[in-house]
Length: 108
Image (tube, rainbow, N blue to C red):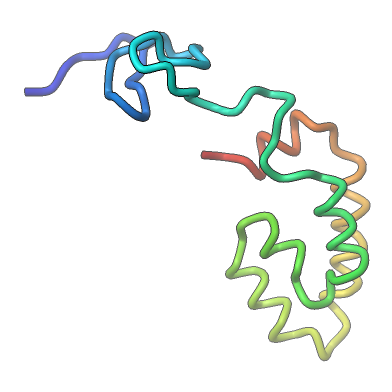
């Protein structure tokens, strides 16, 4: 038996209760549903530093949860192209604000 959920409702990630889609904490079990906008599990400054100093080896891609691209960077590190791309990506990470960085790299 499936339960219909309204557009502004969702299921709790832990107990499965129907809650408001924008709820941060389930009122039934008390489990946090999503990371608040300001809090991020990945730090953009750390990602930028990885990109600047270890970008040629793809360390920033592994840090951001993109192991496929990290392996691709490792395979082509001898060409120095990943190093140049890593420097550019480091600048991009620093120019992003925290909300856009979290939206792009902390998708759950």
